[in-house]
Image (cartoon, rainbow, N blue to C red; front, side, top):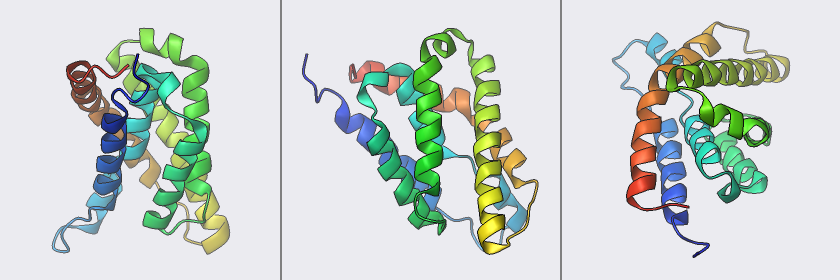
Length: 164
């Protein structure tokens, strides 16, 4: 087995998730639509850890999270820590979570995103006095709704390019 088999697809999907995270809505659109921005990076990392857990490492996920810190202007290491915690939880229970239906996985994604977003908002409130909001629920809901589509697209790509 070639150890680099499909590694480029994992890296490309993470890069696309970073780009989708960085894309802004047009200024003419209402600002509240920004609350519905899904947690793209978490969806992609969650998929790859569920499908090929031996290919994703905590240090690489933490480094990607640090890139997210730069994109979001969050304290350095916050998103790295959150993504690493999500990766560890997924590693810990991936055998069980893979048996869940896609609807059950949607509920799991919702719960995971809500917890991580509330931690992010709490830290931002403590450091920058940005205030608490209901935004994490919107982010979690949109992420849970988009999970089946993300799952199907990445699964098809994984099968087509034989990522093992």
